[in-house]
Image 1 (tube, helix red, strand yellow):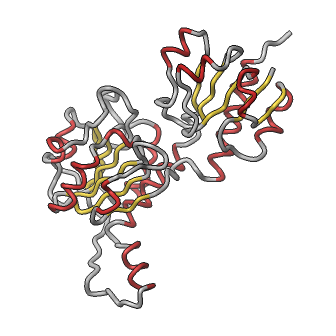
Image 2 (image 1 turned 90 degrees about the horizontal axis):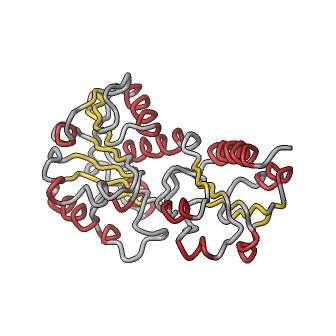
Image 3 (image 1 turned 60 degrees about the horizontal axis):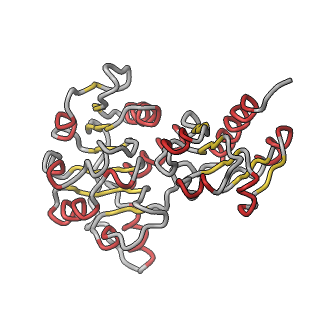
Length: 292
């Protein structure tokens, strides 16, 4: 059995998987591969699957599966797994980092200091303490974020149509009930037909004036142009973004928008998370390999 590691994983992963088959990172060997490991860079499209006649298992190191044609994989009898349990802490910590950095003007303070400026009077901070965090999508990552917000003395509300109650957040029955009252809104949504472009001009009008928006979920859940207009008008005080329409982004209007912190999809890129991902992948492959 050939296991193809198509994207970047922890360096010890090939050794972990070696008992279960031959391991390679040579993408030219895709036609021979029985198992393919991907993250967000490799797109497992219909064409990709047709190029891999021996493929039986795809493992996505991470949460989202929107880079994999799940319907066509199912038609071809290819099992698809992710490693959702691994990334929760890494992504939640990054979302919280953005929540701290934006109201404290960390990037602007650093850049002005490097430019020889003393912008103490211009950079006015606000605190997280007693502010309201609205979490849209209360899965594993949203839950970890809620725990951290509570430790900072924040009030936490959440909207998730699949979650009725929570020990870490007050659930709201309607998305607008979260947006109307939140000083910070953090998105943790999968990309589906229902969530694509959900944060558009109309829904941004439901935000509390001067709120901060954080997106470490999926880039295409926001309409970038509408977020830019909300930033320019002051409807949004700031935007922290780690996810994009494509990696890397092409011609995004956010480049020239005010009060934006942009990150190159770092959410799952901690050393600890890559090790957790490797452990879960090994478990999936171990279960997949036929036993005598």
